[in-house]
Length: 155
Image 1 (tube, rainbow, N blue to C red):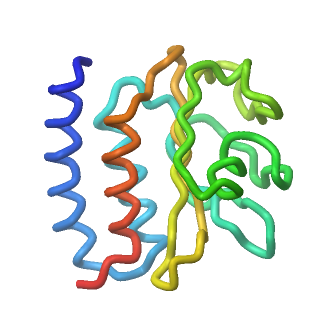
Image 2: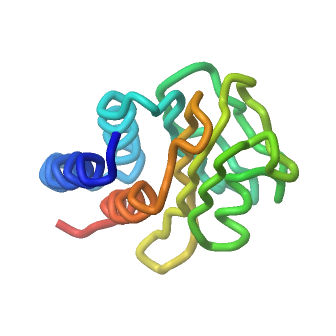
């Protein structure tokens, strides 16, 4: 998908999510809605989900796609890199990422986005996998960062 079309799709999805998420302030319900919408609106999204930081463990919360790892090894892999570095990670080829956790060997590229609560603390990470190499770019990062901010928005 070309960059203009991708940005336009994210803009539409962002508007839809903003309105939908006003109906419920529960962060888990908001995460589930975000995952469902994103997973079904982008062809390249093979696995889409959130891992929550619970008792210093990254634990699966809600997702769409094949069965996932339930708990991710501490400070290893792309999801933990997002949390430890407090920034979005775009990985063109997961096989070349040091410490990559392969929950599904069909995943070839990945993007992860840290989620901050109202106090500005990282509490979760959005993880999106693709079966294509180099599936994610700065447009995905920009819009997914805006979308995860909706989890803790005030109505």
